[in-house]
Amino acid sequence: MTSTPVIRKIQLTRYRFPFDDVGHDLSFAMGPFYEPGGKGFRTVLGIRIYTDAGITGEYMSIAPGTFEQIQSFGPFLIGKNGLERELIYNQAKSILRKQDRMGIGPIDIALWDLAGKVHESPIYRLLGGYRDRLPAYASTYHADRTKGGLNSPEAYADFAEQCLSMGYKGFKIHSWAESNIQREIDTVNSVGNRVGGKMALMIDPCCVYDTFAEALAVGRACDEQQFFWYEDPMRDGGVSLFAHKQLRKMLSTPLLQGEHIHLVEAHVDMAIAESTDFWRADPEYDGGITGVMKIANAAEGFGMDLELHIAGPAQRHCMASMRNSNFYEMGLVHPKLSNIANPPVYKCDYSDQLESIDSDGCVGLPQGPGLGVEYDWEGVGKYQIAEFVID
Ligand SMILES: [Mg+2]
Image: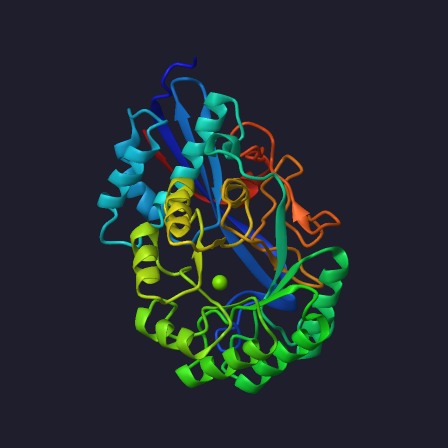
């Protein structure tokens, strides 16, 4: 039995990874999109939690805005038992009560990595494994204006067909993110007519439709094409309990809400308000692996499913330990671009790219202790932009 790993130092390092051929245009798209010659980037926060047991908890986080929050509650962790995740989760929750509390997640994931290394086990086995293959869906970049990209409803259908032939069992449209409702409906129909019935289809407009009527119009197209879910359509930012309850009454397509509310209490309130069908959570946004498993168990108690946001090793360990979840989000994917949500931080062969699935459309679990990935701390050094040490 290893002695208690007491936390002695936390090293926070920020990196900025360049991404070629990615554009940003506030009047055009919500997120990164394909634009040859464009210069995009992705910010990553590297976390190393050093203990006096000589074991280090590590995680590279892509969640936005957590650097300052972690600096504010990090000093509390020094001298604490690094295995007391529940205590740390609850104390950080109080300290961050005036913020969105997204800082808890990356630290909790690094502490689970530590725990896995202490117990010499992959995290999903510590959580109580349910499965070791995860069915993935292809989750696209937002639309673009470029030939060969996702520049038309037909281009989405072509790409969906390509993903189907690779083995994907699901396909999610991140669309134009402009409120051009006819084009949105055309995209739903184009993809639905091409691959409907052969793979689960979803659309996530990322909260851009201006009016309730527009959200309803696209939702009715989803009904007609029997979409698997309809995610975050409205400008309220995905948080209005009343508006989503009303939308649910008028559509047959299941809604998926909850990406923009945080932690288990808000998710339970959303369910009690009858504002969503599928639940949504992300270990980076919702209190780490500790927080996501609380939400998964709460959803289970309501007899509902929890779909995890975006790809990553923490998501894989969580989903492997849940019965009530359908798909792993392989994203963002595109006919021409690599995944900007999967920056090159690994020394091992871990990967979340379009081609990272097997012929059954599944991904597996890293088998090493902790997260089971090896980070390339030296190799990423050239992208460092800031560092903060707590000791
Ligand atoms: Mg989303």
